[in-house]
Image (cartoon, rainbow, N blue to C red; front, top):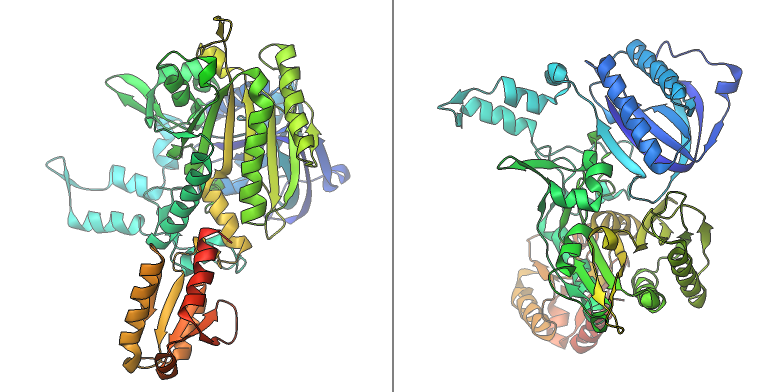
Length: 589
């Protein structure tokens, strides 16, 4: 049994047509659109081999999560996409009905979405750490039934010689099972980032490591350039880059609270009999870094930045290209500061956010949310009031239109979330600024104030791009793969008119590389037509295609064709082209 719990502001859904031959019968009321406010939505897939005990485990888990997020309304929503090992419809419906009854007995208002129908639905997920959790329930006796084909064959059929060697025929079978995933493009739009990633040779996925991106050389360039951009901005503003371990003993996660609240979404391991986990976020490691020596008020703010990979357990059914992955990267920073420094520091962060989103990528924020103190908050009300006032003051100072999300702050502090709309009108929460008054307390962090007394710092959790993977996916779709010059994997392509012009092409490439170090430039000197070469350059979304023929050699000029333009500009001087190119790269136009 697999579930995805979503703590939402609302969900609305309506059955459209039958999805199976014999769906459940619906009353007139259940045929209409249903709206539930502030629910915990349980997307559910009942699998072959599920039993009553697994159902009890699932209900127990839902009750626990509902208690943690203070949800009183629960929506049970059958969602077949979570699994490829579904039970028969009759069994699935029976389990959902039993779950509905059991949860009502626990005191919840329960709404069960119609079973066996295609439905249109809309929901808005909250932004706190427990708002999205995926879970799987499995009994050991049924383990073989619900294992994926690749795992099952590796476990029960692969012949082993001397305990560590696999037969050649079994190796071939395993390799076929984990071969590069084939993308079904039949239902995708042309600018879908998964299609663009394939066409432009940027990235791929493989069943050997689901939900983890294989960045190809060109895609890695985009990834690296974004990180380089972030490093430059942060380096100029006093950020210090750090690197903490990937695996931590469960003691750390117990201190941070993740072991009790987030364990089911963490990759667990065992070392010399001790439980440990891959980190799903950087904050606990940064707390330990702060504790390595005594701190003074003169040191604050301290800004620790990290770009390393994070791992979060997700069910295969919810993975979605670069938008929803298991292995992810954030331009993650934790800023340790005093209460009276909050307003100035938030202003600095907003300045960076504007540079990235508005000045560089021309994104407009669809919505900015200021989320305030929830019912189950931790800390002192006076500190919360000061923190919320500081956040609101800065938003007003920057003349940002924002909405108050009353009671939707994290239990450890208020936050600002920035939503943008992508090319398809979908809303994404990317940049976030969160004030934390709880982790410093749990980790017993202190600094010496001007009064020579010990004080507890406040921590700002801050990500600019959010998930680098998701940000790249949105960029690819917004630009339809035609990325700005500074971000393009290949920035210039030089094309010969005939073989006679090869040496002139090579000479030009050398000149451009000398003038612009690290320029990403290549050539197409194939024995085919110029139109074919230009068409190929256009398909690869290369910003500039320079054609060198006899006339260009004689005059010492260039024929420059910009991406998307039908005709080249003739007679361009090398110096003028270099000036334009350098400006677009250096200024990130």
